[in-house]
Every structure is written in C-alpha cells, then in structure tokens.
Image 1: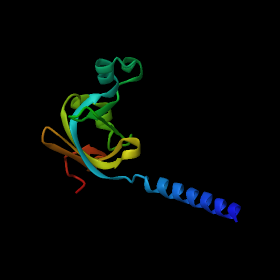
Image 2: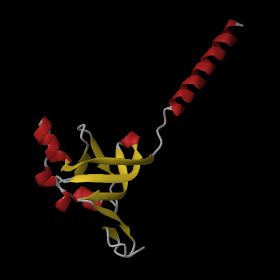
Image 3: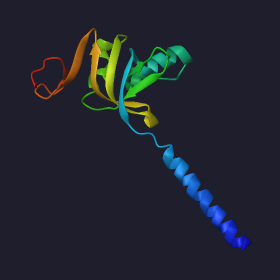
Length: 134
C-alpha cells in the first residue's frame, strides 16, 4: 500500500510540474515600442566595454528604449532598414509588430521615424510610405 501511495504521489508531482511548465509558455503578441535606433555592438561597447567588432562584422541595429533595454528585430524584409541603421541611426523610432518575449525579438510590421510611417508596400517590395500598393 505504501509503495502504491508513493508511486501515485510521484506521478502527481510529475503531472503538476509538467502543467506548471506548460503554463509558463509565453505567446507572441502584437506590441508597440519606442526608443532610439542604435548599433547594438557599438552601444554596448561604449556603455559596458563589450568586445564588439562592428568594423569587422558590420553594424546591427536594435531599438534602445528609454529604460535602457534593447529590442532586437527579426531579420526579414520588413526590418532590413532598421537593422542596417543607415539614415535612421540615433533617431527616435516607433515600431509595431509581433513581439516574441521568449527571444526578446520583434517581427516588425510598421515603424515611424520623423513622423513618417513606413509600411510594407507590395508594389515597391520595401518598407516605405508611398502607398502604391494600397
């Protein structure tokens, strides 16, 4: 009887642990973020002496929020202009997309810089504000 009770308790504990882990699963959801577009490697090198080598491997940009956290962008056609930085480097940016919290990664859908919104244009095959594809 004691052996059956111990086995039953062990099974219940395993089921409880599996259920608890499944409950911790984070789901992707739409989110908005605001901040400054910075080169992640350069910014960390300046702030925390990170051993980045952007001059060798290239600059990869991320959104730095006012509280100092970085939001990374999923690499795809929607985020190319943001990842590259270029004309948006050190500018205030508002970004909307699907946020994957477990990876701290935003799948960009739209963004705005200098009051101009950038959306995917199927006609131009780029993020712009031309509205030709509408």
